[in-house]
Amino acid sequence: MSSTVSNSQDIFQQGGYDSRNTGTSGSFASPEPDVGDNGEAELVSVSWNQDYSCFASGTSHGFRIYNCEPFKETFRRELKDGGFKIVEMLFRSNILALVGGGPKSQYPSNKVLIWDDHQSRCISEFSFRSEIRAVKLRRDRIVVVLEHKIYVYSFMDLRLLHQIENLANPRGLCCLSHHMNTSVLACPGVRQGEVRVEHFGLNMVQIINAHDSNIACMTMTLDGLLLATASTKGTLIRIFNTMDGTRLQEVRRGVDRADIYSIALSPNVQWLAVSSDKGTVHIFSLRVRVSGEDSHSTDHETSSNSLQALVSPASGANPGSSLSFLRGVLPKYFSSEWSFARFHVPEVTQFFAAFGAHNTIAIIGMDGSFYRCNFDPVNGGEMTQLEYIRFLKPEILR
Image (cartoon, rainbow, N blue to C red; front, side):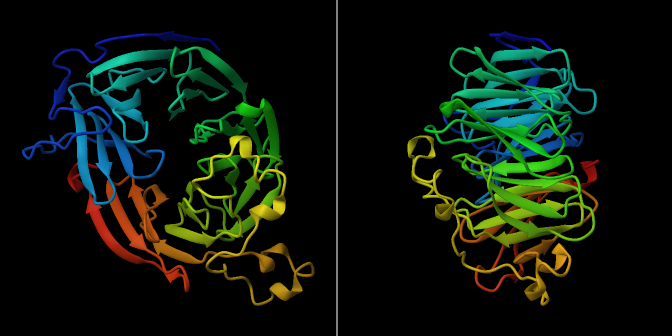
């Protein structure tokens, strides 16, 4: 598989987009008051930014950026012909990665456009021979995920730094660390149920045998020290130390097979959220911790050598079976840790969850809906809905 990289300008031709506001360096400006839906846009994709403070929606006619707390549309680009199946933000900056897709898109699905909205131009592009499954950004790297290969580029000079072969990866699974002192990438390995963790700063590869079935979903902490995974079976979520591959905790979503849509770790690593096609967002209490969100020790030197430093009591405990005292005698099901809190959403579409401030969860759906809810960190149980918004008009959803 080969790739082509080039610096490019004016990929969006004059008149091809409707600039309804002026972007400012480092953030997206607010739309003008008279902005309205054009009555034709269909939702193609939704994606969180790296700290879950914003999300992007790719539509059949461009893309839109939303702030979560408080909820508001902060920016949009409307195109005459075609939209994007991938809109990857770089935190809250004016830089985005765009990949064409959706109904009648004029932009190919095998090309990544790195778009600078402050300059209103494409600053570079990457072309491949096959469809792009995902793009991940950090401040010094651009990662392009194909079905069987991952390319890692330098953001500064667009040099190809790494190529990684993996098992068929139609979901485009890939995680990046975002602390500048650590450079970690996780992706499916070359065998079923395997996760490959690249510690670029240490020039080390860790292979984790995470599940018996293929990997369906994964996420990492911002420093890349902890990894959470689910398989295509969708019953168990496992948390690993990425330095030595040790399994730190296992929680159970349910008994029946499920398609896991998202896994999220709270910034303090006390909680884990999981959404699936069963119409429930589950919250689990974690017994793992890191040395601190603000700790930037180079290459995990403070916590990688001691498993004990990664395991601690959490605020609440996940409920288990009343027969858990027979662990080792009865099937593993009876000793499982079940969800601490939960919130119900419609089963008819995909939902993606993320943690907000003060024990809140934000949930975005492919039906154009946004929920914000609160969970009790002591007692758990059913979450309380705080907010419900349709960020696209119901009549224009597909």
